[in-house]
Every structure is written in C-alpha cells, then in structure tokens.
Length: 346
Ligand SMILES: Cc1ncc(COP(=O)(O)O)c(C=O)c1O
Image 1 (cartoon, protein in one colour):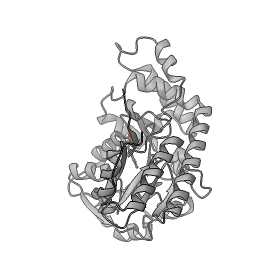
Image 2 (tube, helix red, strand yellow):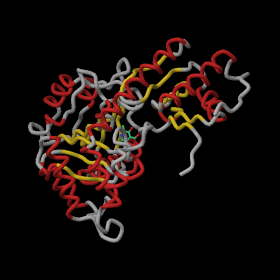
Image 3 (cartoon, rainbow, N blue to C red):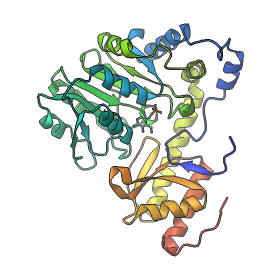
C-alpha cells in the first residue's frame, strides 16, 4: 500500500511487524483455502504458556474489540448496566450502547479512572465494569495494588473486564498485568491485542483470558472461524520474536521522551507519557491544528468524541516522523494556528 503520509492517529506500531512473519506465511501450508483449526489450539496454547494459564483460559478473537463484544453478548441480560470510567476507549462505549446496556460513566479523578467512584456506583443492575489499563486516551494507568484492592470489593456476580491493549509498551515499575488475579476471581476477564506493539492491526487478532468457566460460556456463542490463518501464523512468529519487541519498546521509549521534551519546550501541556501515545492540551480548538497538520500529510487524532475538543492524541512514530511532526507543531506555535501558511515538508 503506497502511503506518503505520517500516520500518528491510531497508536499502531510505526515499525510494522516482525520481519520474520512474511517468510513464515510463505512457508505455511494451505493458509488461504482451509479453515483455521488445529492452529487455533496451538496459538491459544502458546499464549497460555507465556501467560502461565491453561490453554482453555484463552479465547482468540478478531481483535480485542471482538473479544469485548463477545464477552458483553455472552453475559448480557435485560436491564443490565455497565459502569465505565469517563474517557473510556470510544469503541467500548459503542459496543455497550449497541448491546442496549444502561451506561453509567464515572468521572475521572485527577486524570485517573476513579476506582472508589466505580465501587460506589455499583447497584443491583450492575453487570459489567470495563476498565482500560493503561487508559486510551488519558495515558494514565491503574497501579496493581489498587486493582487488587478493587477486585476484592467488587461483588462476584459483576464481570470486570480489563482492557490491556497497551500492556507490551508499559515499562513503569508500578504497572503490572492483572492476569495473576484471574486465579482468584472468577468474574475477571482481561483483553489483549496483537494490534499495538506486535504491529498486526491489519490482521485483526486479539484475545481474552479468564477462568475456564467464563471462557467456555463465551466459546458457546463464538463463530468457530472468527480468526484467520494469516493472523494465527503471524501471531505465532510475533510471540517468539523477542528482538523485534525489544526494538519496538526502545524506539517507543525514545519517541515518548523526545515528544514530551518538545512539548515542554513549546509550553504545550500533555496528560501522561506512557503506552505509545501522548495526549496534548492545546487550550484552543484542536481541530484547527489537526487540519493544518493534515495539509502537511501528518495525521493526528482529535478527541471530540471524548468531549475533549482542545486535545489531540499523537502516537509515537519513527524518529524522523516524530521530528517532522515536532517541526510542524513548532511552526504552528510560532505563527499561530490561524495564520500559519502551510507548505509540504515531506
Ligand atoms: C484501549 C484500546 N482497546 C482496544 C483497541 C482495539 O484493539 P483491536 O485492534 O485489538 O480491536 C484499541 C485500539 O486503539 C485501544 O486503544
């Protein structure tokens, strides 16, 4: 696919995916003409081994968004409510709306998902709580010790879903996956994806992990062929390619530091620097900035749908892409967003 733009809008991996994947697909058997079968089992087992759980605790899905959809469809009932933190990832809300769930949104507290507020909001209709750790678009994360305390207080008839889409990028010592809590809590499900650090957004593969009984229930309604052979082969290779993951993390850390430094120098406020993106507060209509950037083929994410009209979310790109974006922002800051005369910098 020819593409001369700099796409910093969807938190994809700017380096692509493991270079070993292409060859593995070429060498695989009849990946195009046959339904996926044994290889589904093989991949679930591989993921389970890495996570230290049983293979039947892992359910593969067409992206983690499908995993969330399946969880909600499986356990939804009439008049049920879901509790979401304010600024929950937009598609989570869409899924819940389409499932006709009553949605209660709990205001964030200092940019954090407010676990105490969520606990307070629990009532007899509450069926689901969806957390995102780290949060997109806030970039903040819930400390493991807080999650532990939270889970201990949630009644076990409420299903807690924790979206860990950015898990692989998180290097902060206080951040930990909640997967080790699954043993203790039969009402906990974690979703993960190959779309972010593994660089496989286009192949659509995610999964959820929970206790066997929960996963069994979801399996009952799942299309047996919800994922495809190419994605399975790619994921198997990706899980083994530690070198690519190390490179990805390093590049991302350097990018986060570089972008944050540039924002500091431009006196642009930002929320947090974690995962693979930074959400900045431009203190005026962000769409103007996004439009000027777009004219220079730089695509960023405006956050109107989150009710954050002054904010832009910028994904970490390759280092030269970050530099082009920074230069463009510097020029806008000097000239003013209304007066800037745009010209291509690519
Ligand atoms: C928090 C979060 N969850 C889920 C997703 C979607 O992931 P997938 O491609 O696995 O459906 C995204 C994508 O941006 C995300 O930011």
